[in-house]
Image (cartoon, rainbow, N blue to C red; front, side):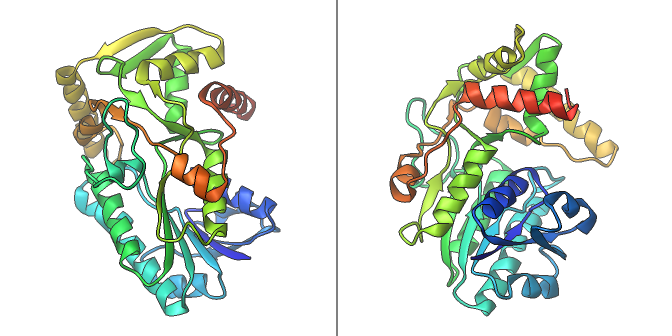
Length: 322
């Protein structure tokens, strides 16, 4: 089996590459920075220089592949147009190259943000009418629509919160917990799902290996549902410390997010903490039901929140990130 992985040098992509290599798959990584891709292991992974807006690079990347795992995308951008260029148009370019190559298997890593929030107590199964509430979510949904309209044998996987070794977003919460603080947008009762990066990589491999997953959209997560306050407490527990919960009401939250976004714009940086993000932070639930994925792919998540955060914390310490 030969597989192309886009976004291979990123957090999720690097875990997927490790899983594929262990499974004996010949992996090709499309990378903007071949130097950064050296961390994947030159003896195990073929690295091609290029990105999703270079058609010649894409043509070479899909050549002789059996399956494409499309992980690359952006989670932070300065405008909806930037999100669409990266997540929709980048996907469109890759799909076009794959279609010219033939009937390739194609697995898109999307996001629960494309499906939208869930009602409290009713995790989404993946077949509901989508209702994204942010520019990021809309761009991921449009990427899904590009894939669905293609001639490829496609599957779509929507993870919620992804955490684990090498993640830098949940790391920020660990650093705050180390200071004894746990800021929470809203009342702390928002329901959440999550998945450890190694479990997500195993899910992607399982989906890509099976014929009965073609044409299906799955939510990939551990079946455990927890609240945003539970999440902060679980992080503190993994570190062996306690935290003071700081609840941020909607008006204050929107003001803080506006300030963060403005500050980043002035310094030329991007951040996920924009005013648009308030449309996610104050929803009742962001939860997914992995039952269809488990039943149809025979995949089973290994890490519940407690064990997954404990392992992540130990990796952060060993790596010198904490």
